[in-house]
Length: 440
Ligand SMILES: [Fe+2]
Ligand SMILES: [Fe+2]
Image (tube, rainbow, N blue to C red; front, side, top):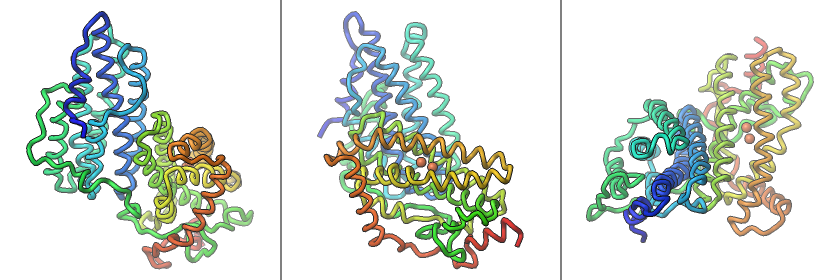
């Protein structure tokens, strides 16, 4: 076992020699980079576990901003002697963040991340501002001052989601682990772990839940189908030229809201790829935030069109099936099948919606399409690297075909099992959308 204190203490022991002043700052930037990238890898485990859409969206936004911090820290760090090669996270930090993910109760885990680790990160950034030279190290100072403002805003934005669980003893546990490191930058004297301290991750490490949380919303297996009395997105209606464009508009907003599926299953991939290059996690974080915005398109627009969100069931099948597959298989299905395959239908839908002269709808769909094109590009860029991480040596096309087969078989086995949370007369269905949209 690696002693956590020795790691950080060694990292921040003052350098000697001609470039010591630069090396000292570069080592701090390196620790900040590692802390931010590990936050991205581990805080993503909260997303599928919390239920409220607005909390999921906020976490996706914070994860994306943290990935941005890490990238800027790395770029600046590489300008300085002593930042070090490679991008790996030292074991002491990895263990601290893995500990934060461990609680089975999502509200307790959230309290640990936002009540202990984020404040530790904020005080580490403030420490950096105090110890660096404002003129010599102006480039870093500018970045760090911006990150301090971001961290303060993150705390304000998260405040209303905290305090739902009695997390006091858990916060003490994590704070003890932080104190043993002497803070994230070794900025205070390390306080050794007390006798009897037990890492939660050693007895009960984090694992992805078998199904994702969408409380307080009702759930179902899938929102797509052919029966307008049963599901909201009636596949043949989407492309039937006789369908009223107002009906298509509501159906596509339900479709967008359900991109929450992508939020929940994509968020699981970070934890499963601890040795991925940072740029892979950076692009996954962007992908995740994009999907959360697409879902928000539906979440915000549906009520304006008269839809009560409590009547919209959330589909769980994709998460339930994909979480049982390997991470690179999840990512292959997402980018090479669901996203790459969605363009023709979405194009037809966009053309129909343009009949409505609804500038907002046209705008949301245009940005959605642009984002999705980027996601398929990410897939081409990163799937081969992710396959390599898992020792997959087949050509990409062969692997994707085999994965599609595996998905179909698993869908037979575990798909379609989530019962409807609402009876047909209380849930949003194609028939109900038709009445709502056309006052019939
Ligand atoms: Fe999307
Ligand atoms: Fe996407």
